Image 1 (cartoon, rainbow, N blue to C red):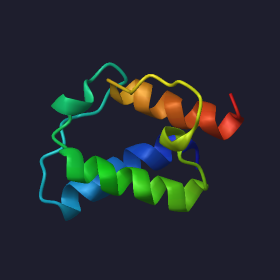
Image 2 (spheres, rainbow, N blue to C red; image 1 turned 90 degrees about the vertical axis):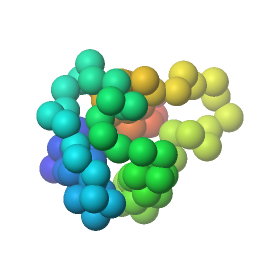
Image 3 (cartoon, rainbow, N blue to C red; image 1 turned 180 degrees about the horizontal axis):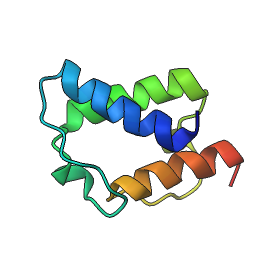
Length: 83
C-alpha cells in the first residue's frame, strides 16, 4: 500500500472509532473540515509513526503545518522520501 492509501484508510478507521462523521476526502479539503478533531489527528500521527517509523513533526527542520488533506499526505510522503 502507498502512504496516501494508508493515511486515507487511517482517517476512516479513526473517524469510525471516535464516532466522527468523515466527509469525502480530497486533496484540497481542509483538515478542519474533514470531520476529525484534534484527538483524532493525535491518534493518526501516533499510529503513522508506529507504522511508518517517521514523525515529520519532530524534525529540527522548519516545516509548514498541513492545512489540507493533500498537505498532510505530502508531508508524510516527503518525510518517507527523506525530502
